[in-house]
Image (cartoon, rainbow, N blue to C red; front, side):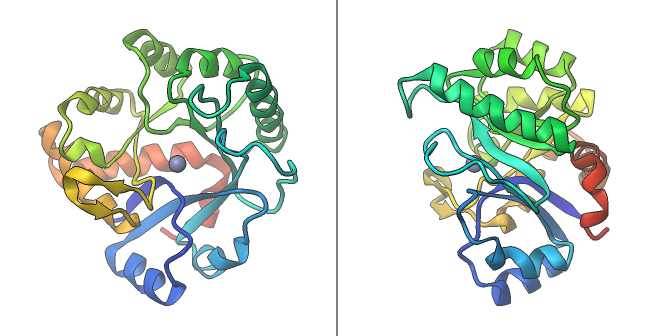
Length: 238
Ligand SMILES: [Zn+2]
C-alpha cells in the first residue's frame, strides 16, 4: 500500500534520511519548490520515483523569473491578500503560470487562502487537467464550484485535531479529496514540525472520520492522486 502526500515543500532533510524513510513507509509525495531553488537536492528522490517536483512562484514571493522547466508540475502558485496588497499584480503572475501549466498539460498546486473565489474565477479561463486547491479554506459555495469543475480539495494535518476542517472530507465522495502535509510546517496542537512521514496520521484521521476501512480509503486516495497527476503517473514508482 502506498500513501500519497499531495503537497509538501520539504527539501532540507538529507536524502540519506528521507529516501529510506519514504521507501519503508511507502510514501510518495509532490514537493513544491521555487524556480530559483536547487532541484538537485531532490533529484535522488525524483529519480527513485518517490517524488514529483513542482515549481512555481508562491504569492508570498513573486520576485524572480518565471523560468519554469524540466520538472513535473506547476506550484505552489496562487493568490493571497495577506501577502501583497496588489491583487491585480498577483492575478497577472498567477495567470502567467496557469498558462504554462495549460500549455504543458501539467498538474498545478494552488494556494488560495482568503482568495478562493478570485482563484476560482482566474482558473475558469484555462483548460487544466489536474488542479489541487491545497489546504482548502473556501466557503460552501466555493466548495460546490470547485467540485463541479473537478478540482481536487486538499486537507492536511489539522484534520487530526480540528473538527471544522473535516467538512472538506466530503470531497472524498466525489473522488476529489487529496491529503497533504505541507511539510515542513509546525503544527502546534501536535507539537511537531511535519515531514512527509506525517501523511500516515493524516490518512488515519481521515479514514477514521469517514468511518472507512483504512485500506479501502488508501485505495480511493491512490486513484484520486494518480488522477490528479495524470500524464506524470509514470514518474511515480507504484
Ligand atoms: Zn504549501
